[in-house]
Length: 64
Image 1: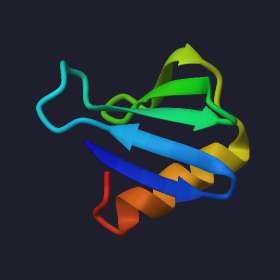
Image 2: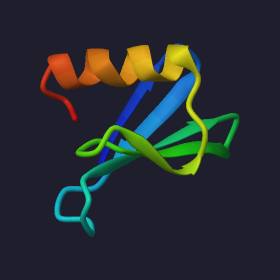
Image 3: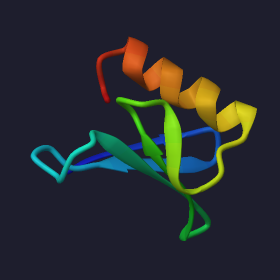
Image 4: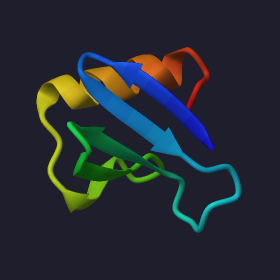
């Protein structure tokens, strides 16, 4: 399990989790969005522009 904190959000992903590759984004313990990293779309919830920017940063750093 990988867990990263950025901008007041917690991003969690599991290596070897079911496809498609995705990340869970939480704020204050509540799931905000489950984001499909392969297809760039929400699987559950919705993502703000800020969340998408943070996901892009984490991907650019090779963390997701």
